Amino acid sequence: MLKRIALTVLAVCTLGTVSVQAQKNESFRPKEVWNDTEGNPINAHGGGVLYHKGKYYWYGEYKVGETVLPPDATWERYRTDVTGVSCYSSKDLLNWKFEGVALKAIKDDPESDIHPSQVLERPKVIYNKKTKKFVMWMHIDSPDYSKAEAGVAIADSPTGPFTYLEGFRPNGSMARDQTLFVDDDGTAYQFASSEENQTMHINRLTDDYTKPDGTMVRRFIGMAREAPAVFKHDGKYYMLSSGCTGWDPNRAELAVADSIMGEWTVLGDPCTGPDAEKTFYGQSTYVIPVQGKKNAFIACFDMWKKKDLQDSRYIWLPMMWDEANGKFSIPWHAEWDLSVFKKK
Ligand code: GAL
Image (cartoon, rainbow, N blue to C red):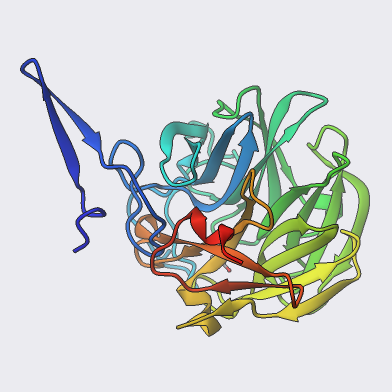
C-alpha cells in the first residue's frame, strides 16, 4: 500500500504532549483514498468547486452511513440517507480542510426536500457579487427519483451555514443531474438533465441567482447527457458530460459552443489512456479553472462505488489544451501535480 496514502500520521512530540498531524498531500492520485488535513477521507461527492478570495471551496454530497437498495427498487437506485452538503477549503487544490456540513439535512420535518429519506445530489455553489450571497443549487428528488427538482439554498459565508429556500422544477421542467455556470458578465445559468434525462435544459437565472428568469433552451435533444460540467476557455463554452447509466460508468463527451445557449457542437470523448472509453470508471462532476495559470483546468470525476457510496473515490485529472490543434484532452495519470500545466 502506498505509504503516503495509508492513514499515515506524523506524531510530533513537544514538551511531553503529542499532537497528531495528517501528512501533506504532494500530488493528485486518482482513485486512491484522498485524506483531508485531519487525516479523514474527503467526503464530497458529485461536487463542485468555488474560488473565492484566494481559496478554493469544494462542496459535495456528504454521504455517511450504510448504502441500501430500497426493497421496492425496480432499478439500481442504491442510496444513502441525506446528511447534507459538506464543504472543504484549500489554497493548493491538494490539501483540503474540512469546514463542516455547510447545508445540513432537515431531520425533524419529513416533508422537507432535504429530509434524510430524500435524495440530494450534485450541489454547486456560486457567489453573487450584487447580493453578496453564496447560492447553492442541487438536485433534489424523492427516493424513487420521480420528483426531479432543483433545490436552492443561500448563505452569507462560503462555509455556510446555508439556509434551504425551496425546490421546484425550473421553468416547469424536470431537473436531475445539474450544474451552475457564471459567465464573465455575471449572468448565471443552470444546466440540468431534463425530460427524463434525455435532453439538457439551459436555464438562465435571475440577478440574485435563486430562480430561473424564464429564458431557457433545450439542447442535446434526445442525447441523454448527464453529469454536466461547464467551463469557458478563450471565449468558447465547453460542456463535459456523461451518458446515462446510473451509478455505472460510460463514455464521457465534450461539447463546445460560441454562445452559452448554443448551438452546441459535440467534439467527442476527450479521455485518453487505459479505460478512457469508460471515463476511467468515473463520471464527470465539475471542471475547475486553475487560478493563475493559463489554459489550466482540472476535470473532476466521481468513481462511484454503488454498493458503498460513502467510499466512492475521486478522479481529478488535468485537462490538457493542445494549442496546435485547438483541442482539449484528458489523459490518464496515476499521479500528477499542477506542474503538468507548465509543459508545452
Ligand atoms: C446517475 C447520476 C447520479 C445519481 C445516479 C443514481 O446517473 O449521475 O448523480 O443520480 O444516477 O443512480
